[in-house]
Length: 318
Image 1 (cartoon, rainbow, N blue to C red):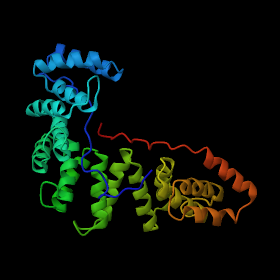
Image 2: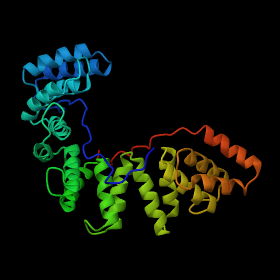
Image 3: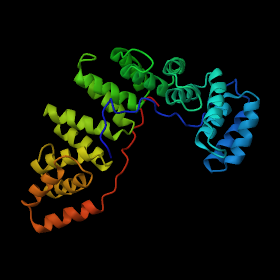
């Protein structure tokens, strides 16, 4: 798994989820909602023809979520040939009805120049519309646009505003990027407590790299080494090589946990296989200081290692 930084995070995350009417929304006809739901079930089972037929009928009645889903199907070739122009047309129709995902996807097509002319200014305008509707993916993408100066002058402070709005909705990439800005300082005032808070939001949403960042941040403080070990362990189990190497070093030294050279050697093996810097050298140095029995057990554990996604922590507000 490759390492990432705020600058390397894609500024446009695709919003491909099928839009559903809000529960109990009085403006949605129950019959339309039921038909839409049945089409969604068909789509999820791979029965694209049924979904396409139903959504076309609902789109003819002007139902925004169906218009959006037809855009998704044409963009990604679900039951139809890939056609970016048609996808853009469907997204545009859904965008007129203020479907946030349609605004985000249409913005992305304008950035990429697929099915529409490449137009960063129009993309920014569409993201602003979706952001005002409360869309966290749009707010994240708008923040990234301001961070990188796409369609506008680069403005890290404005980027932080939009990242914060998305992060407070639990959007992991936005929380991660905002935490990095607080950690680095310069663009905005450095604040390690805020960095830890937003890395935690991203980690709770299942971001493995946020667990790595928290582990590094807490390890550097020297006051919460046990918590650092716990976060590094989650990232290591998710397959983040840098976390595996850092965790192995701490376990080999007995920092934050009981010294465990077998487990440390296992993580050095895994991290070296993934190309982590210095992991192979660390593995060889530790292997030379332990018994053959320990070396063999560590190698067997490394050979059977399989990455596991981080757990998602449900918000207490839900």
